[in-house]
Length: 158
Image (cartoon, rainbow, N blue to C red):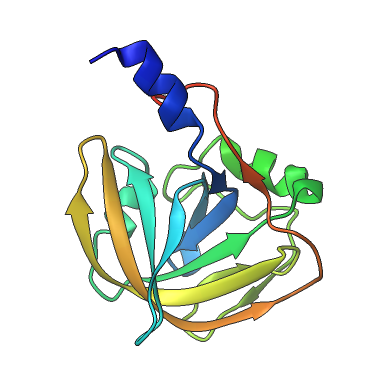
């Protein structure tokens, strides 16, 4: 296997720019994500890849844990930058942002293009990431725009 050729090819797989929020109250936090995909129709479900060792990993390991996924547009780079650095559990992640509570108590970023809330149904070990599957409970389009889609130069890193 030629790892360099594989890296370039993997980098051409398109992905989006998303913010995942989870936890409630003092444990509420968020992270920038690029690997989110619809995973089922009935019930509606999605999958999210979370790098092992991230602070949110412990929250998204719990069955039934509430979460929200937010879709961004290119014009929402400020939100992406805010969550791109990552937050430790207990560190204020939403300072300066406009939010509201979802039905399960998870924070929804009202500046996003769209959002979904749900609960964790399970996860699968995928090497350096967990693939978390969640059942969607609510969602809405918050504004008009096109989803932020991108490709990477290197298929082995963000």
